[in-house]
Length: 184
Image (tube, rainbow, N blue to C red):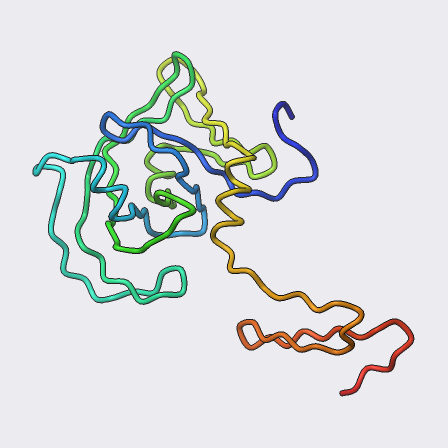
């Protein structure tokens, strides 16, 4: 697997062309029913008015926050490798979230429209084109940086400190020194 350090479990992060801009740090999420552009990314794209639709939908939960979708953006999205490209009319929901890690999220709708296959092991997205099979390769180093930026730091207990308790999403984690009995 050329260019992939093993073992690896990073997400696929690609840089598609949206309108006329290469947009770095787009997370490919096969589990998401939404295709998301963050407002800061959307503003930089400077989409013409015919690519923007107002939206009136109820708030939804995304990244642990309640968000209010602002609008629908329908730019052209192109994935490419050398002379193999495919372009679709994407439909992104624009949300105002301050996320320093990613510029947006490519979910199932876009992946289906691209007729893409995602390989997490190989960090690739493959798609049919008129010239054969194209592939967008994920960047493992950027994926690691994005992931680390998206995960809040957690205080890890040390052996010297004895028992410490850490609550994360109602999950209790205990550290017990070797040879010490665990209290229930």
